[in-house]
Length: 275
Ligand SMILES: [Zn+2]
Image (cartoon, rainbow, N blue to C red; front, side):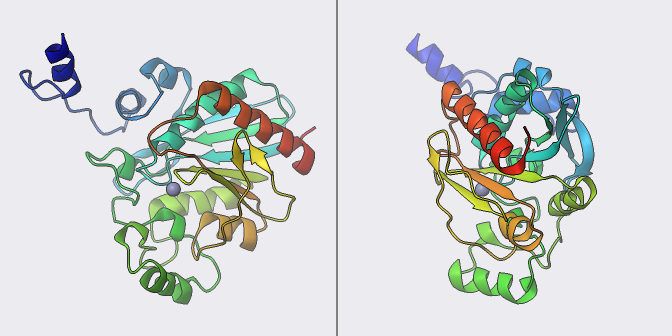
């Protein structure tokens, strides 16, 4: 039994190599990839999430799938984005679970969920933080002074860490261009960006920040050249809640994900006026 289990876990020492899963151009392939790679997401859950290709695509041409959940009289638009860094699969799982909560919880919000902004990084054999061209998408937004500051910060503060390369120029990547264009086109009242694994909550924008979401507490860690929080919250005055889950590879418990969702709803209603 142990040998059999181990053989299955190891991908089958005696069996043939696991069947390769095609790149997620289609919803069926996406759901297969998600079930195989994400913590705590089944194929059925993915199929029920109602994802469809949106207007954006990755460098390799993979669609950026999205799901809109719309109430009859929406007062606010909220964009929730996961998988900005490809090696943070828990962030995508959280967004998938929140789609279920949004469907089940009435609110005056038009939700737009994009669980994987960086499919090229996430669905590689070895997932990477950066996109297919080696760019950290969360350093690629056009914050003022980017040309000087982003390269300087990268060289001096990260010692040219390849995982944090900001790109040759702002918005050089199709994935960051998609989010930039989405902000201009759809004008969300709030952006929620999900990351891992620092276990904190961050906020940029002209509002009183949420103090906690579930067990994650506010800890404003500062701003980076080219980051979404800096571009959206500081520069464009479009509030950005940044969630840093505790683990990149495991989701919080179901009750904790639900509590985070309820706390986000309450803060949004109180501070942004979704009552
Ligand atoms: Zn991240």
